[in-house]
Length: 426
Image (cartoon, rainbow, N blue to C red; front, side, top):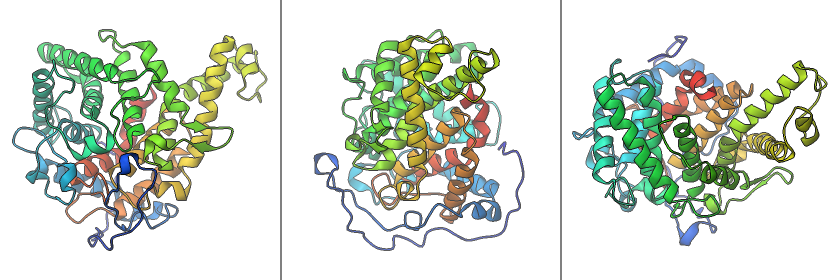
């Protein structure tokens, strides 16, 4: 585990005392009449402000170590992890459910971000087994629409039918530069291309992924991020036109001028929509900031000049490019502010795996954009997550994605986000 500073760890027994009460708060906007089981949870009912203290008192290192241990014990013999079926959201034993690629990829990415590789670290064998499982699934199903024949999982039902390919691609992208074995590197490259092709086939003409699930805007957001990462590898073919349409789709989910979000594809939940908009405008927002700084140093712009179409054109961009970057800048800053509001951070009113994913996207976005506000966000969200960690080291959702394996992996990705600052900002 490569957390930079060791914090004081106090013996503490937090954890949730169970599901406190069924909450009759069903969302009328949810697609196809979806009515998830919603429970009152400690996390959803408390403000995010002031939780930074818990991060320092309880200790982020201790939370990560116990979370890693839970994941290692939850890995199935075939090398993967499972979230379980949509029909059995009450199953909290990760070893009692079938393995699926999406949950496996999330767990593997969590261990990787916490400092382990397939060559080093306490959980290197767990990562290698996960990689072997994912490569087997991808190649076994390369002629099918999806990378797995397993259907009806919690993750697919909530995030979309192709979420397995999306998250598996994200893991492969991260791992590929670290692989030193030539044969294995070629196998992973081949699997990356298979995932890319399947994801691209799932886009419609508007840049939205078909069969996107209950909170499908999140799947589309993760898909875009995964394709952007794959496109950096010259050996991988990515359709740039489809990627641009997908980016445009994500940006149009937030109207920066009116400060409102389109939540139709996000189960009617503001958090899902705005965190996706933030994540998919972050890279361009970082680019526009660099362009502005460079133009100021070169004397093309006044040192106090702000982002505008006129100033970007003075900096050397075409009218079309300037327009695109102005939109990204507006969407990022407006949506980021919205995503950090307490009422939005409460998500559905309590927390399922989708809320944890939304927190992750917001945090990564702020780092990608080199946003100084990210530290405040991280301290409060980190403290909040630490305080509601279960006694066995896990986290679980209280509606929709309830899986302890998936939720624990996502929370670990949030808590260890500092480890990936350099990689995210590249």
